[in-house]
Length: 177
Image (cartoon, rainbow, N blue to C red; front, side, top):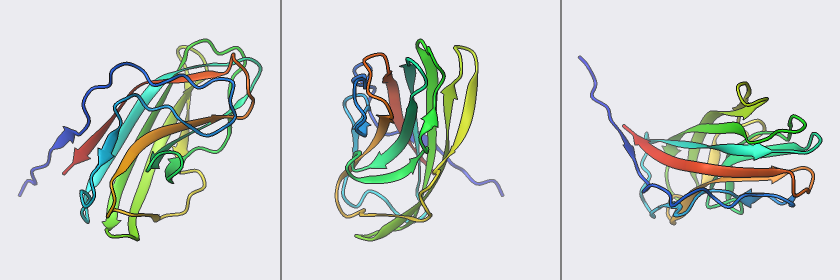
């Protein structure tokens, strides 16, 4: 017997790209506004969410870049992030894309989720390399589902330069059932 399923985008379309991150080596939220905040008690056991984000980056030399999805902002919990990836030299508006699947295993103040995804980081305007995420977080990831938290995208440069920039052009969250 076939099983019916559906997907629904949870957040409203962004009002443009997120703020570009440059001249910084601090983990920073690059999500477009308005961010999606999951309300307290929204998650349930067996629920699946998908975070999709994409944008462009530019570099000078070969700096490292970390990209990831976060619950409660970059100061909250890393759901899945890359290790520091050495980028190509002289990137000029090269594409990147993050796709993260989130599976809720338990709820509560010590709820748990399993996360799996991929970051595609441009090696040119027409080529990319895939990086599986999470690269170092062990599963399951513990989160508090009893409080409201935003799902966001964070980035961090390894070298501070005005020429090392990354912008999240769009991000959206889907509920999958």
